[in-house]
Amino acid sequence: LQLTHITQEPTTGQLNIRKQQIRANVFRPHWNQPTMSLQELGEREVREAMAREERQKQAEQEQQNAPRRYEQLVKDGMEDNAELVDASAKLDREWDEWKDQNPRGSGNKMGDRGDRNF
Image (cartoon, rainbow, N blue to C red; front, side, top):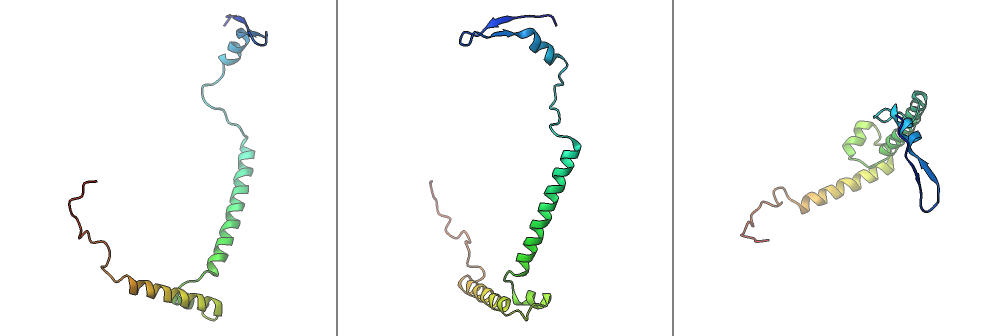
């Protein structure tokens, strides 16, 4: 392409030559090119996998010490841990209190469906 447009910017006085810009874009692909090599991508994936594995181990450790139902403690063989048994008793007590306060069928049954103009 042999098109040449020479313009001058009014503020800076710099000459813009358009012929070189067009030539540079002639063989440029119309899709986005990769910004990193396969090796860089592999290293990044390995780093993320290691971090994910570390987070998973930490979450499993926290889950191991989290309060849960007593039946689950017996199933896991951890009923000898006094802290977990106390937390389990508290959890069971709170669940029983909630069940007493909210008997089965006491939810919204759409009994009050009057004519409402919102």
